[in-house]
Figure 1 (tube, rainbow, N blue to C red):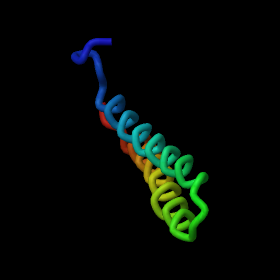
Figure 2 (tube, rainbow, N blue to C red):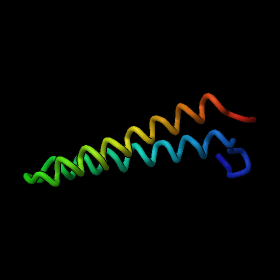
Figure 3 (cartoon, rainbow, N blue to C red):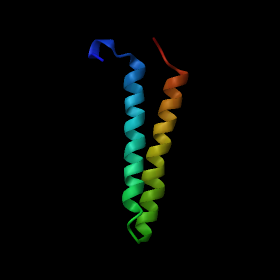
Length: 66
């Protein structure tokens, strides 16, 4: 697909997917740590990024333009 053929929704979905993938990577890395900080990183950063990705997708889906 060419850059001219992309819709604004495509870029919003890319941002959403990037946030979700980053969150899953953080969660995957912290699964191998055995410290209290790993739980905090998993909870606040990992789950937070995944939640932000889902929220960004839902908001962009509801408020799509064009």
